[in-house]
Length: 132
Image (cartoon, rainbow, N blue to C red; front, side, top):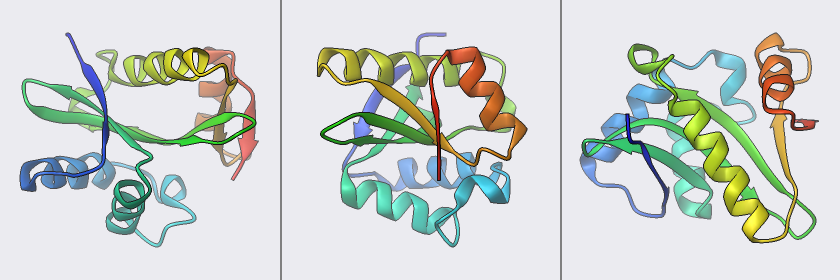
């Protein structure tokens, strides 16, 4: 499945619906420190840190990619439940890694260190995990 990864600075009404569906499937701990999915999405769009995977004009997964001076941090990675297991998260992670390397910056994951999902993703991707 060819998933195109892009940084979203503006979102169409359909993109907003897709993003809401993506983060509706997220566990509550993944949204922190944001109060809810709507605020996470708004913050990502406002700061230009929201990246998303698109297939057939629909967004299937998203994450926040902070581009700091010392390193880049990927957080809040989520894929719609019905799309999981098809490589969308891997594509988002690989593209974040490629962009960070092209900028000469190391990529780190940011997430709750007490969550097994965060620990597992960090181990599988061989990236350090920074606590949120």
